[in-house]
Amino acid sequence: MTHDDHALARDLAAEAGALLLHLRSDRGFTDTKALRDAGDQESHLYLMDALARQRPGDAVLSEEGKDDLSRLAAERVWIVDPLDGTREYAEEGRGDWAVHVALWHRAEGSAGELRAGAVALPAKGRTLSTAEPPPLPQLDAGHIRVAVSRSRPPEFARRLADHLHADVELVQIGSAGAKVAAVLVGDVDAYVHAGGQHEWDSAAPVAVAHAAGAHASRIDGSPLTYNQEDTNLPDILVCHPELASSLLAGIRAVL
Image 1 (cartoon, rainbow, N blue to C red):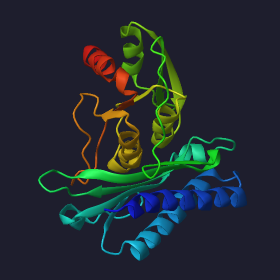
Image 2 (tube, rainbow, N blue to C red; image 1 turned 90 degrees about the vertical axis):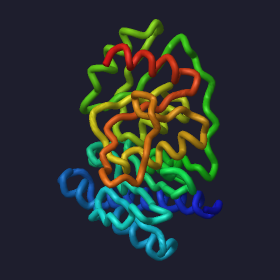
Image 3 (tube, rainbow, N blue to C red; image 1 turned 135 degrees about the horizontal axis):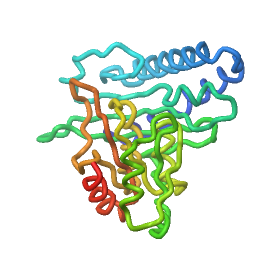
């Protein structure tokens, strides 16, 4: 694994994002289902073609592709979500959608780990990546902002807000990538989710979060593991590291 993998993740996420912006502008928002479907497919095809050319020996797990379980024996697996937040993508004026590109590597003597990743936020003109991890902002512990789903804000997040001895604000944001990015740039302090996800929803955001020094785990505190036969990875906590212990304790108390 070389620095070129970090740069490749960043560049591919940004380039797929530019493609999605062009598609969005060209098609408009009259037929939102067609726009969502076209975005998913065209970004997927772009990423698959680029990885086949630039990393022909690596396996790929994509939300929009058929899962080839030969990846389980591979040393390197790219985990991609060509369009994270299709609902937001098809809503005019929304920027909380993303493109995820991550590299998982089989480390000797371990279950493997994320080594590189990028989250492009094309409508916001920003790509966060392990090539240049963003510096974590200062924490205001007196007012904790927690990102939650727009469509399915978890009930336990409301209970968690009531349980913590602090002023807690629940902030609805679209895609998982946009939520983690919001933590890393200081728009919120934590992201908690327990409504069901897959590996491609979190791999790239978690790679960037780890590189930036943020906490990222399951909501029970256990590690997030990738390149598993079952891609289901239903819950996640990403937060400023100073909040991790109190949030994990609070989650245990309200679940």
